[in-house]
Amino acid sequence: MALAKQISQTTDGHVVGGQRLARRRWPLVSVILGVLTALTMSLSIWLIFVYTPIDALQGETQRILYFHVPTAWAGMLSFVIMAGLGIIYLFKPDERLDWLARASAEVGVVFLTITLILGATWGKPIWGAWWVWDARLTATLILWFMYVGYLMLRSYMGRTVESARGGAVIGIIGAIDVPIIYLSVNWWRGQHPVTQIGTQGALPPQAVLTIMVALVAFTLLYAFMMVQAYQLQRLQTLAQRLRIQVE
Amino acid sequence: MRMTRVFCLQIWAILWKDIRYELRSKQTWLGMGMFALLVLVIFNFTFDLHPDTVAAIAPGALWVAFIFASLLGLGRTVAAEREQTSLDRLLLTPVDRKAIYLAKLLGNLLFIGVVEIVALPVFAILFNLPIWQGSTLLTLILIVILGALGIASVGTLFSVLAAATQARELLLPILVFPLVVPVVISAVRATSVVLVPSVNEPPWLSLLLAFDVIFLSASTLLFQYVIED
Amino acid sequence: MQTYLIAAYIIAWLGVCIYLVVLAMRMRGVRTELAAVAELVREQLEQKEQ
Image (cartoon, rainbow over all chains, first blue to last red; front, side, top):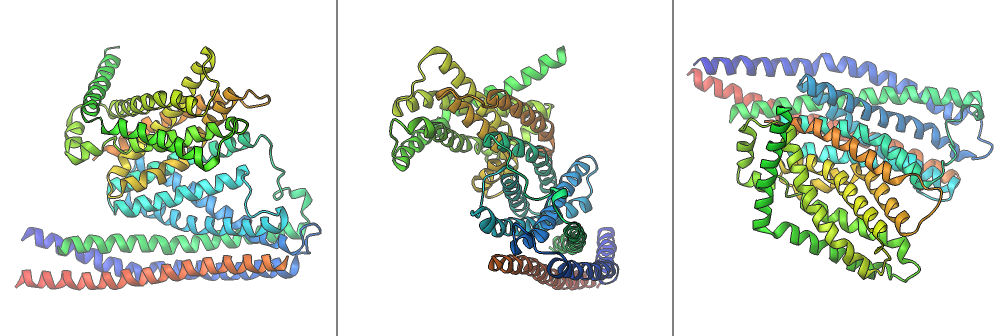
């Protein structure tokens, strides 16, 4: 009887609390983030296509970079967040950290996929090749593989504590590994390819402004997606837990 | 001092248990060796090796064979123990998790190393490589052992993780290949520098050693979180 | 030159939108499931009380 009472308490707490949270608190955050994202994104599109002058050397194609750089930034950011959450999780296990890490990996893989495709479509007209095995590209590709491996492992292991710990371990090892990969590919190539982007002095001020706005817009988009993905992780865990109680 | 001795004894006990198990079953290391040789044979056909191209392609062929073969062996790290549920009993014993990791790592390294050192002369014969001077041979063996250590240190950690799932044969390479890229690059380049000396190369052997140390220490520290119940 | 730009932007937006749609669909799926399971729990509790 005591057990039944306990179950009723926890389930009521879960169900009611979960539904209330799902309906009220998160949508407010989502709405704010969504509106901000839409505003900055429209602004940055206007900046990209109307405001900035056409690049003298690369022509129209250079405008790809205004999206390529921010998506790459969001992809790297989510990896750093994932690794940081992994370290915290190992010291202080809390399932919310794990939901956040998993959401981060999921959003990160979306952004990195877009980054790689955009980079290829920029590279084809400018470099004459879809892909070049330079350090930056290789490290990004390997990072993408790590994300995919992480997500595969997590989906195979289910929602357990071991799965969360394993994810944290992959995040940490990956964070150690990515700089090493970058360096070793650099040595392997024997030469440092000239940085085409990021040389701030070469960019006109309009371009710098555009890229900054685009960075803000994509960071907001990233935050928006993170809130959604985190919410999804939370609700999925909740549903699974409830089903176990029923069975 | 006594702690260290106990630690080493624990490692040895687990390692010796695994060695006896593997010697009795034989299937893992025989399979690994045959697999490595077959990959080398396939490479001979896919690249149509000539005496002038062999020095450029041989290091890559050798390391592809070694990596695939070692992943076969790594998959077996705790698979047998999971199947017979003796892993729980191993975890119940008052043994440091680091000792379990190091024992498993040494076991993997031993099997991979034996297979690779046996495959190395065969590889040299099949591809007509000039490796028979003392110093060249010693350097090559050192590179092979260091490369195997790098792959095994990450591989042991992740094989325990992957063994907890249904799809461990699939997951292990997906997790391990991206992570061992630095080890692979430096091992391949070090091998090709030994075969064809060239100037202006970074010190690949020292880099390989550095990567090994990084991976080994990170994996040793993180192993307890992977295996704890 | 411009084809690459157009292709790149279409791909980027398509990628973002597809992911958002997939997220929304998964969210709706899990909400339905949650409601169904919550109903089951409620029924079970009622049975126990009787």
